Image 1 (cartoon, rainbow, N blue to C red):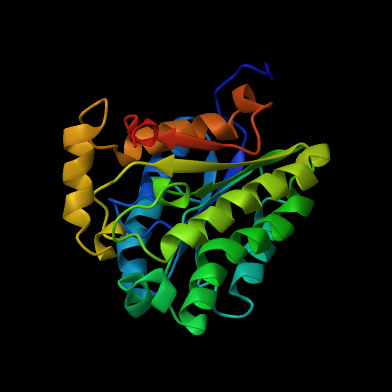
Image 2: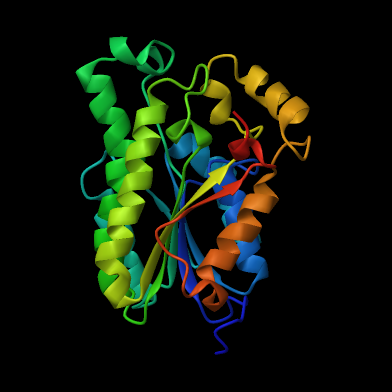
Length: 258
């Protein structure tokens, strides 16, 4: 295949974090499917399963499995199913994050050890576990992607605990990229701007972030899940074969402002 090709025909990928038709992961899944990839999706619990199953059917997903990264064995079961179904994997999109509400809505200095550890495990260390399980299946290289936010690099009002957690995630991306590069596995973070998703609405005063993006970003508009998906699909393609270890912004230019 031409190294500049953006097609995903023949590629097989796992999308973790599709919560509903408005989630970032769904925008990625749609873009991957439209580019020709065969997909496996996961769902968190029975409530989300009812929303995700029709979406998985819409894309003709080869697998649609439960995955709560806090439940022992579930992540391994997903990768075992992929091994049995495909025997290979070309890309993974990791789009999950969580912090207990009490810790998220308070000051970082007041965060509990338990809340911080849980946020770090779900939002960051789970990506490391995904990479470890994906590596043997990416025999011809591949793409690992995760989702960050500007709050990793700058102090964003009300983003609180997730700022340090996302900073750790971006650092993890760099270390994984260095360690997996010889295997042809590329590792990148995508940093979308403020999006109107159900998950993001859990941030205190989230409407202010949306208004700020509309009023101050160079593009004067909100990012969409489809724009994030387009970048995600590109990163999974052979055209991005030399791109690794980076954090790529899709935020209408908010990241250049102070």
